Structures are given as C-alpha cells and as structure tokens.
Image (tube, rainbow, N blue to C red; front, side, top):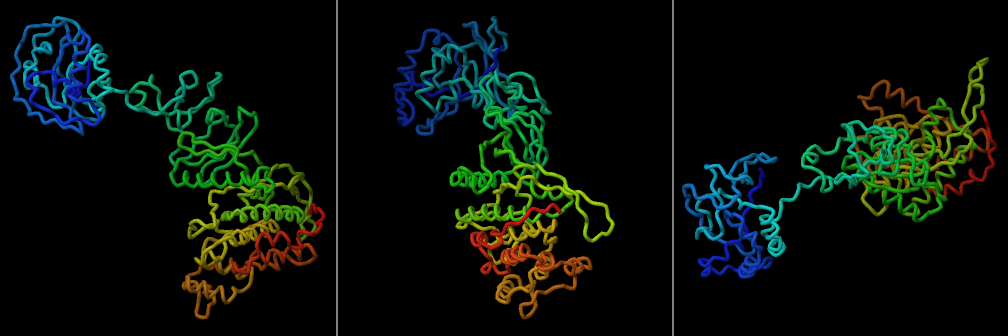
Length: 578
C-alpha cells in the first residue's frame, strides 16, 4: 500500500476539454497559458494516459485566479473496474496536528467493493470532478511515478502548480556532516578512536542531508549546552572538526575558555567559547571586529594585545581562537597569597600596559574593562624565594613566587568601544571604575587611564585599591585615597548626581543609613602616600605617576602617551627578591 498526500490538481488538467472553449482565462505572468497546457497535455506519454485520474478543486495561481463553481455533492456509486490500480480515501493527522485527507493506492487487484474504481480521463464529468468520487476541499488526484514523471515539464513551466505535481520535498532539517565524516553525537560527548571519530559538526553541519529521515529531524541533535547557555566541555571533543579540546582554562559571564590542539598546525591554542545567548553573541562580534583591526594594524604584535588566529560559529557558539598564554595576573597574585610584585616587575608591567593602551587609543579605541583578570602572562614560569615579614620578629621565613618572565598580553576586547560610537552609561569592573562613570558625567580615554592607576597600585600592594560595591562608598574611598574632590569636578557631579552631595559641593558621606561596617571600611582606607611611601627615588617617581593616573578630573588626568614619557620609566630598578 502506498500513501500519497493530497494536493490540488494543476489548472492545466482542465484546459483540454471542449466545454472550456468559451472560457478565456487571463494570461499568467509566471506560468504557461491554457493553450500551452493543452499542448503539453497531448505530448504526455501513452502510459500517462492510461493512469487513473480523479480531479480536485483547482489550485489558484496568484496572477491568474480561476473562479470555478463548487460542484454539487454526488452520491458514490459502483462502476465497473477498468484498471488494475485502485485507491481509497482515508483521514490522518499530520505532524502539525491538522487533519488531512490521504488517498491510498492499492497496486494489488481486484479492489474492494467499497472503493471507487479509477476513472479514465475521457469519462471525467463536465464540472471537473469524477462521478464516482467526490473529493473534499484540498484533495488531490491519484499520483503514481509514471504520472509524476510525465508531468515534470509542467512543474518547471508553472511554478504556481509545482506543489501539485512535483514530489513532496522532505522537510528541512539542520545539516549534518557527510556520512563518511559524521556520526550523531551521543547525549554525553565521548571520545572515539576512529580516524574521524572526534569530528563534531559545526553549526552549518547540523542541517541534514537528503539521506536523513524525517524521524531524525524531529529528534534533532543532542544538546551541547547547559541550562545557562554555556558549552559543555568534554576532553577530546572536536570543535569545528579541527580543534581537539584538552582542558577548561576558565569560565566567566561571557562563556568559557578551553585549551585545545590545532590538528592542522599541531599547535596548542586557546578557544574562547561564547555562551549561546544573543547578547553575548552580539558582543563577541564586536570583539572580533576589534581584534581583526588590532591584528591588521600590528601584525607582529609589538603592542602586546592578544591576536586572533581564527573564529567560527560552532553549534550556535561563537568561538575565538588565539595563542595559548599563561595564567592571568590576578590568578598569579592569588596563588602567591596576594604578595606584591617586585618593583622591577611592576615597572615592566606598567611599560607594557601603557604601550598597549596607547596603541588602542591611537586607533580611537577605549578598552573600558582593564583589570588584572584581563592581563595574561605569556609564561607561568617562576622561582621560589624565602623572605622575612618585617613586622614580625623571630617569625620563620616565608616563601614567595617570583616570575621568571614578565611578558604579558592584554585580552578581552568584548567591551571595547570606538570613541565615535555609542557609549553605554556604565562601563568597567567596579574596583577599577573611574569617578566620572560613577557620577554619570560621560567617559572617554581617561577612564582607561584611571583603571591602569588602580592596577599598578594593586601590583604594589597585592590587593585591590577600592574594595566596595556601593557608589557613594566608592566615592568616599576615592577621597580617602586621592584627597578631596576638586571643586569644579564636584559641582559637575552634584548637577548629575545631587543625591551624592551636600550643599556647597561636599560629598554627602556618611549617610544616616550607612552601616557601621561601611563607615569602618571607608575610614580604614589609606592614602596613596601611605600605600606608596616615598622612601627612595623609585617610590617617589612611581607615586608621582600613580597620582597623575588617578586624578579625579578626567580633564586633568595624564594621557597614556605622556605617561610613557614619565621619568619613572627612565629608572634602572634593580631586581629585589623580597
């Protein structure tokens, strides 16, 4: 038994009867005329003329609608069997839940007595419907392979009737890889040992080929994401059919970073896999645009910004491939018990960071998210030294890690903004946020400068300069560190955020609702002169540089290019282990 979905009969099937001579339909712009249909009808093979037909409601063409009166309902009656092919009408529910009519063709004679026999084309009634079969709306003629082949030319000529004549196309599904390279991944990704066993389909390959079944399409590929849209990392997983995952390096709001092996170049790389969330995908495209520009302007990476090696879309995750680097500076501080860096290393870091940011600013780019987490060491190698805590007498020596190489790379350009483009209201991570951002006064290149000042102080002390999550408390801490807010800047801030200021432009701290702990934290915040005592020339120059970087008023803040010319970078600082 074969089942054929019902489709309207093409209007050309009605144009070869004498009773239609008086009717002249308007010529169609897209399909053949009635005379052309008649000509094509007479050129059909003899086999096609022997096939049974049952005519249905006319499939209207948008450019040449045909208005045919609905025939009266006729009672079914038995007729002598004329051909070996019989059919019956059945009703079934399609995958969308709608009821549809289906004609069942029975190739084995004789037909049951309850089934109307086929009617030849010469016995079709004048109203266009078979006398033995009254089809419902949207029913279709009996279709066989011979009939479909004979009417193939009509399909090409009449696009509006193509759904009636042409075979029903398989429902579209996501593409898959070629059968030789692809095997549907299990619910939990596992490694395989075959030559192509680790090949995983990309976003493009999740659409099926013609050999896939409808059942496969309804199931779809197994999910590779967790409930938050993060890509589930499995060792030896193959990404983009090129990169074999090794281990998870880190995870953040944006997504995950994994170490992988490039099976083409046989090198280790880092892949940033963005969450399958629209806003993070959009941000990643901005980052790709920025990274491509940086690489174009600095192909040899003299300015120490991370270079993009490749990017692609894998299973709805934007992936950015870059060189494999070491840990971030924050992680090194954490693993070193937040012991400060040697002053020689701080100078090395400061020179590289200012150079990287100056390069960005020359390209009219603002990073907006400078912090130790976005500064990576090229190599993690270090040596361990012993040191004595000065404040503790007779205390046993403690161990401290000292980097063997201070080369770094600036990363994470997902928030980078071109100066001429839209600026969001709030940028930067809280601890490194400039005062003009907190006060809603707008921001530009100087906000990066302020963040660099916070970072350099953190390198010197080992801990973040401003540890708070409240705007007013943050401003109060800034006044403890940098001194009173300049009067002009305070007036601008009072106009923008009057709730933070008293009459006369003084910062309104503490508020009556401020907690005891908050008051204690602000009071315990030390000034820059206390944090960086000017005991020698190195500290004196370093303190002067930091004061200029952390100026309250962005108009008075030093630029990164000018900072690179500061006398601090002319000093030859000796290496200190303790």
